[in-house]
Length: 365
Ligand SMILES: C[S@@+](CC[C@H](N)C(=O)[O-])C[C@H]1O[C@@H](n2cnc3c(N)ncnc32)[C@H](O)[C@@H]1O
Image 1 (cartoon, protein in one colour):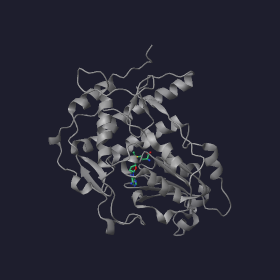
Image 2 (cartoon, protein in one colour):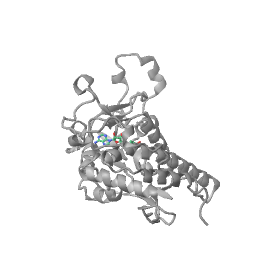
Image 3 (cartoon, rainbow, N blue to C red):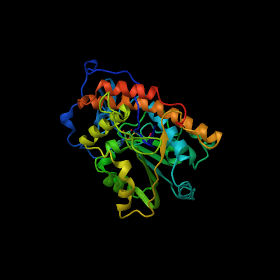
Image 4 (spheres, rainbow, N blue to C red):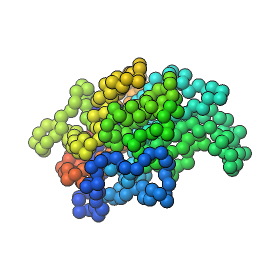
């Protein structure tokens, strides 16, 4: 079993919760717009913005944009840590088009190079980019760390924007995070970035081509836009879509059924859940972009796939194991939305758990 490289792949080894286990409930009546109504030219101000999180079915969620229905808590950030490592191993690095990106980001005297990460989440990508392209000698800064002029001395290099960025991990000096909803527009950032990036944010986006347009506006001339999106569909070893299971007697995969229901719920609520499939088309339709390129990457779930060399086998098995673990948390993360939509069936969870537990450890012969 394998999946499109996705935020959102598979699995389920979590305990089955019943609706009566939960106390709070999400206010579905307030979800019509999908986007919050305030302007977007700000970073978080507690006095003005009040609570940025709400608790639903035992998990914390962003309170700005109810379209986005994966949690924003330590469990989810732990999942995103694993997913980030999968992306690194599957892409072969932090970013697509490495020669172009490094060329664009070569330090130039007097030029402030900047990177924007839209939907930065746990901040793994933004922090890793800030560390890879510091453009400042960090040891020189140490005596200045307590100086009030530090913001002036350290060039701001990477900005991560998110509905609910992880706040418990201090970023390096050349990186910062903002609470904001990118669907409200980013006019304060237009024309300022050499690299603009978005990874796995489609659940919080209603109009993805408009999101692409907005990110393009944030680029400087000659800049590059990098997007990674997933597909809530499992594929077999033959790279054909797997069937969803609809009853204990039918063939197919419970896991795929769970993903199908998740996809349907999120799409019904207005999320651009097709982004992984239509991304290249939408990029090509954007009149301001040129040289659009795309590729599809499949990742194994479970350590069953082997490569031609020992090193490649090790890489694939590591990805597979990370994906298995990522998948378990992933299903737990979607559970509150499925419960709110009345779509969660314990049979899917139980079946998916069993399927993940019994994933093959070796390629089929
Ligand atoms: C699945 S996580 C991926 C996080 C990160 N890009 C990564 O790959 O690890 C998606 C993130 O996008 C953010 N997001 C979704 N819609 C957003 C929006 N409209 N504005 C800002 N952030 C958004 C979510 O809050 C969440 O942190």
